[in-house]
Amino acid sequence: MLPINRSKTRRRLSVLLAAVVVTALALTGCGKDNKNGSAAAGGTEVVATYKDGNVTKGEYDSFVGSVKFFNPMYAQFETDPTFQDYMMKQLIAFKVLGAKADDQSKKDAETKTKEQMDQIKQYFEQQGGDKNAFDMQLKAANLTQDDIKNYILKSLIVLGDAEKKVTDDQMKAKYDENAKANAYTIATVSHVLVSLKDANQEKDIRTKEEALKRAQEVKQKLDGGADFAAVAKEYSDDGGSKDNGGKYENADVTQWVEGFKKAAIELPIGQISDPVETEFGYHVMRVEARSSKTFDEMKDQIKSELAEMQVSDFIEKDLPGMIEKIETDKLPKAETAPQTPAPSGTEQQPAAK
Image (cartoon, rainbow, N blue to C red; front, side, top):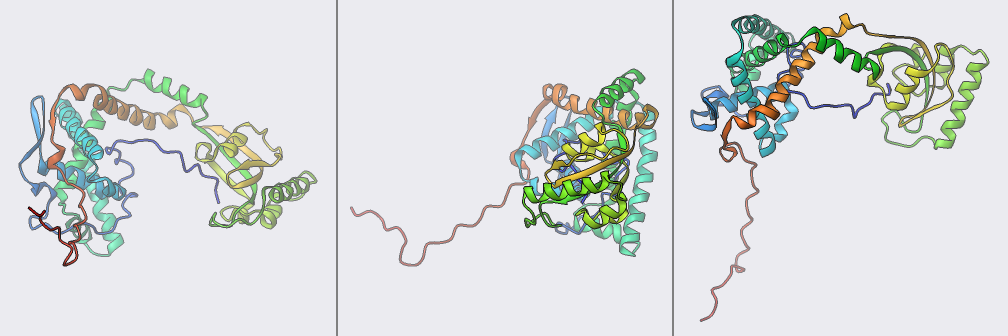
């Protein structure tokens, strides 16, 4: 079990699909059939107005339907007014910023959108073994290829145009800031995990005292010259590495839980650590190698992140002053459970006069 930091999450715009759209498609059919086959067929009723424009119910349904298509977990928030407000603001921002984008940004986005659509179709064909697999998934979600295409195009126009406004100085400053926080540190680490719980992290298998004693025994063996791979195979409870010498190679340290990450950053190369406590138990570690990703390796990612921040800042700071009305009362509502009728003979009787 790799000591992954599961709490490491951050809010992301729904525009982030240029590099991950295909790998995010672990989808199953959902939704009800729409005779028109498109969320955009939701109607021309205006559900939001802003300076120089408006959003129709059909536009909103198409946008949110596409978001859910790539991020199925968002379906649970579909009727949440806070989620609806945020989705509406994103859609309005895409319309406003997209209208301001230059012609080259739009042309580049069209090329990338075609590439994305081809990749998506190919993915579904490979997964479903049917050339119509993509359309079948779309039909189940009340979407068409045009819905998805328009969503991707809007997203890429906005991101692409924002990236043009990111300067080299901004990227370098962001790189230096992140590098100081070890955001780009990669390490090869061998470790032996002595766990407190079973492989599913459900049942206790040792007390902390028992685990620490076993970890100290591991360290003693390694300090005495025992082969790390052999010790890992015998003692480690990490099923993901014990048969590989306990090794994780060239890994991004930011993915690890704090105690393990700190040791991976600070331990002298080649030194056997004292037992390192994490939520998984105790680790006896040896850092084999450590380095940092260079600015050239990271600048494209940094540029995308800074562009993303530009859009987020626009949504939070500039957009509210442009919005005139968002009518969330016209958007989907959570179904309320029907009231159970009172049993016969218990109806409330009129008051006696």
